[in-house]
Length: 459
Length: 81
Image (cartoon, rainbow over the protein chains, first blue to last red):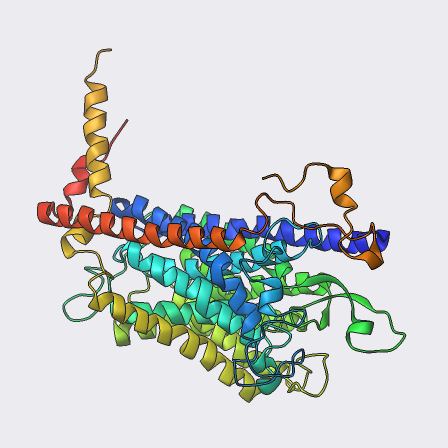
């Protein structure tokens, strides 16, 4: 970089994404606290380790192939031609092709003085990947093997969510072009898919022992430590700020980008490179949080677990269109999403005997789906892209189909199939005796022995 | 082994004669050119981790299952340091 203004723009963008990654770490801190708070004492340490170990597993696989998939798959392949290569095959080269920016053997996937953005952008997307896997982790606590969860975490974190991001969260994605799919802050591409994936796994995994009575009535296995759960959710809110920031490009000149001769228009944009303002998005984030909290408190009659979760569900519902909504629209949309998610959680639990230990399918999956569908109506007619006529406008049918793809095709189905394979090989669920005794039984027994030995020692 | 031995020389490396002194040889990590081998080693390490920890977990759980302590047995092991 030899030009001062260019350098400032690049270094600012580099630092901007770097900060988003730091903030998004808090999402994972929050998820860990939340899961440990929700699990019972005898399972605590294994529950914590299960969620922790997804960090390295998704990270290394994101380096090996996850990032590459994002840049290679926007065309499907075979569904719609790329605006860069004009081919509907895998996008491997041509500026933003997979081999140009994400080949793990490329010199750009390392410290390279000619590039200041790829690594921090890779990391921002990686933190989204952790989030997707962590959403699944909470639903299945206290009965899945760590081995099986590791495989499932890689599948959702480094394969399926990144395919959906290529399709619907990329300026060249076929869902954006053909369906007019719009999902600025990932109602669908992170939350609906992860919720659907979790539901697919839960359908095979089965409930925790004792969750349902012999007559099929659900029993509440409440959070052992509600305060840890609440603080965990507060931290997830905090990390969500970083998540929102990372979904934007902070400074971009849209004039030359859109081919407008002689026009200079610097702005923040969303992931589709259409303009928005960080200022307005900040209002929408807080108003949708408020809408979720208010609705959650109302519908759950002040239950802390559901009120906190509803704050999150509210943001998730409004996220698809929070780059364009009015703040009051965000507030109301968040409230609707929470109402649906809460009702759906208990209906599915009773009807299908699904034991979602933390309500992850509801908070992320159902709220995400509702958010996509509402976005199709509220933003009906808006352009999904600034790159011309090749892109359909945002519309209800396109968003509805998008929701089915996110929750069902790339979420539920792969989760169910993979869980079936793991179940058939005897690797999915821990032995019944271990579940009863507690995953941490050996650790607790050893600690008790140590305590006795230490307390009886005289020197 | 060292990709960079002199920063001044490195930052003025002519990798494109039309922009002499402007572009630099961007890679500064050790062992440039071995990226494929590094990837292979990384993948082997990753897969080996699954095999090793997966079998260890199964063995540990089958031992505990054989002992079958019961759903309340852990309560006698709660420590009060």
